[in-house]
Length: 289
Length: 331
Image 1: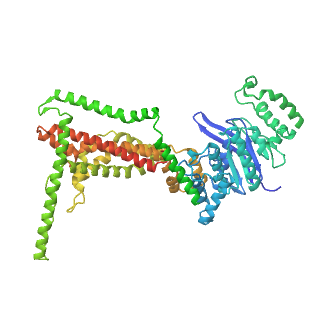
Image 2: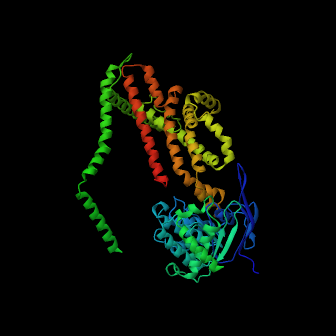
Image 3: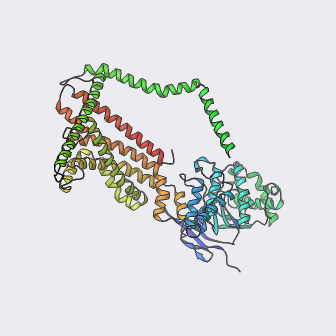
């Protein structure tokens, strides 16, 4: 068996609260291969972000740990670039300067000034933002800012790209557009990606694997679903592809039947529009089994 | 390329012409009238009220001065300044002439160069006050901003320093003044002093009273740097200094400037009080001298000083606003 690119072993995360320690994650194990696109999905508060922050090095697991390419993760670093939910660009820097800050820091010693400039422009062109180099984040739309955030992360040449609900704050059309861009880029660069999402369609469309997390406290991996759809994927033709529909139903069934939203009774679930699908899902899941 | 620039410039000219040709709409006129007229109306009403009310207030130095008397004294103070300037120029010219003559007779001779010994005029006092307030404010900024950054960045440091800030912040300048005077007299001993002692006393008092808003605002601004931006900085492994320079400082610039503007306002108020009490040169001393003088014009002259103090304070704040617009990214 080949060694995993990224491996989380026996991860436990406890937070100190006035009422004593709160175990957010417990005994979480996960192996990810190079070039894999993995989505983490689960209900709010199940600790998805905690997992991502542990891989990023922004949080330290209380037990177990994370190994990347044979090195233990102890602190944050540019080889594990993060794309945050709300772009997190420096509002006082222009689009170009925001990417420059990262490139300057990571490649100061390895690239000449000219090479750095070309690299910045290359990455901004990759996300189609090379037309707004001198704009400040406040002057561009949320979707554009998120593109720049992705360009900044890609410009660090990360071995793992971590994305924390990167498209969560965007409208549906912009989101679809950015998802397509991300698929293209990933196809081209073959990055390893871990993405947190709430969106079932997004997870199925983009991922090679979907990691479904159980509800906290003491959340862990519930199901691990490999998505074997050929690439490049097209959202329109996939919409009624039987395999795609099956995958989608499997995830929905996990989220709304096995891991019901914490504190919600089945009857009260009618309002979130998934109720009418649960019947189908059950049948779909039996088909998979 | 040339055609491109020609078209752009021609469209620009066209747009400008169009703007000139089109008369402002009634709505625009109304807003413009509001912006210009209402303040004017306010000022005129105030002057009218002042003019009518002032003669009703009788003091031992005669009736309280109205706007006309104050305007007269403002002109008189300006005239005194001009006359004094002329005398000073004459004095300097004569001195130079005399020295040149002495040197011509005997190149070895030692010549004395003296400053004009006349009393400082109102305008001179304004200059002294401005210089003192800017020096004190600058010193306060140099102390408060770095200290504020440290307090904002470090929880433990914050906990240690916070009680001190809370206690010293409300102290009146008048309480500091005797202490500052004594300490400056005792420690600043020099045969050829670079600054006057009085200048140092006023300046340090201003610093002690005006550094608090900047200090507090800087620490709050630094503490409020978005956690996401801090995380970006961590992922990039920015060094402590780069982190402060590229993330913390720019992020807190808006808050720092709000603090600086409050500080400058306090500095100006404190300075006048300090000058009055300590008899240090400046506008405060002018007011006190006129009060002691007690001539029939004194009240008018003090009123001129009051208006000048207010107007200069307003200009200082506007000046800070201009600097803020240049430096801060959020405006």
